[in-house]
Amino acid sequence: MMKYMLPAAAVAVCLGSAIAFAQTSQTTTTMSSPSGDSQTTTNVTKSSDGYAKYRRTITTTRHYDDGAFVAPTGYTYSRYGLGEMVPAELRSDDNLVLGSYATYDLKAPPHGLTWIRVGDDAMLVDRTTGEVVETDYDLFKS
Image (cartoon, rainbow, N blue to C red):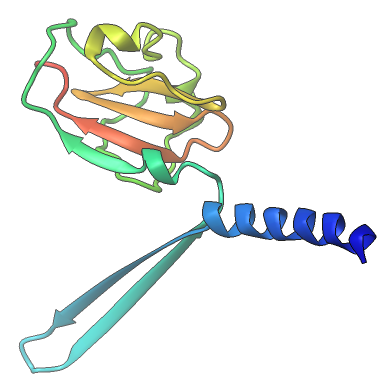
């Protein structure tokens, strides 16, 4: 009986960790037309990447003067939200990566994530996929 206890415990721990990392968010939008018709859209996003504790949006009250934002050639500014994908040209541009994140009172990024500047905003993004995990809006002065 004892030889089955250890494997059963290992399976329970593995299943528990997978459930702990799973995250589900739901957004419901209802739109009404002047004729009285309405349409409801529900978006459900499931994530199991382990970044749940980092997912948040902040609009800061403290601003840093770090000069004007210089976008890569051909890029037009867009404000990104959680779960959206940042283009590769933004996350690969060394001038936009915030390596000195502590200077801006940002927390250290976990493995696989990096802080970048997009306009006046700081974003914690996945280096590989470009998914926005955390946003800190208006961190920089225009």
